[in-house]
Image (cartoon, rainbow, N blue to C red):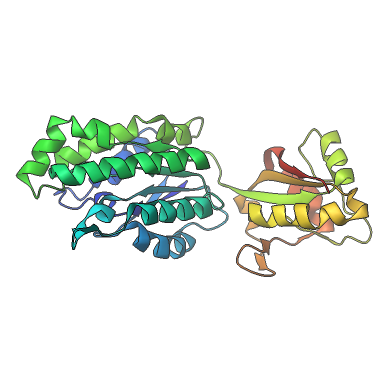
Length: 318
């Protein structure tokens, strides 16, 4: 599993003399439990939600290849609340819009978690932080992204407040980061990523495919474990990498196609990454129009490398 942590100075671990921050500590803890992870700390000191909105995709794209079991954790917001000329550096409405756009796009790439901004010593700023955390929580609920409010427990933490007071009123040192790490480590949103995963598990790639009515009937006959053989005029099998692309095909093409029975289904499934490495990713349009070209005679082998069941995640009719 590869995990990108994207955010500000708290993600970076600024002021931690052990250079671990909370991200390093929670990743060390799951590694001790036997999980095989690679983590990328992409915290940038001073970053606002606007900064992250402009940079997160390129940084994730470089670090999370499509064939990996990937995850993304966002944590930001504190810098948005900094006052400049009596105004927040990023107004609340813009912070909310940036966050919604970031999470909406990130969900199409990998499972996502969001961790809210922590409290500082400045009382008036804490009011703004608490308000922003509440709005972030609401956005995450609407988008079905797990959200962790760390403001509330840390505001009551003597360790956290003492560390801020003895440092720069904003960042803790080692003990404070350890306290934040404990909160995240015990959070169900984080723990759920590691249930039933062992160091021996092989990496898989999540793929999507739009199918019509007849093909769906044949998938059902296989007990949702295989795609049917190609017909004589179908030399290539096309699974796609982005859910949005599969939705586009199912909704806009299949529902207008008599051969598809005017039905469009979006399927989701996982394939062993080692098997897919021999097939280059083909881009046939914009960045979301990416697919594999599997020769029809190799589809049976492709089916044998599917892990688990083929799921139906959307259905479209005229």
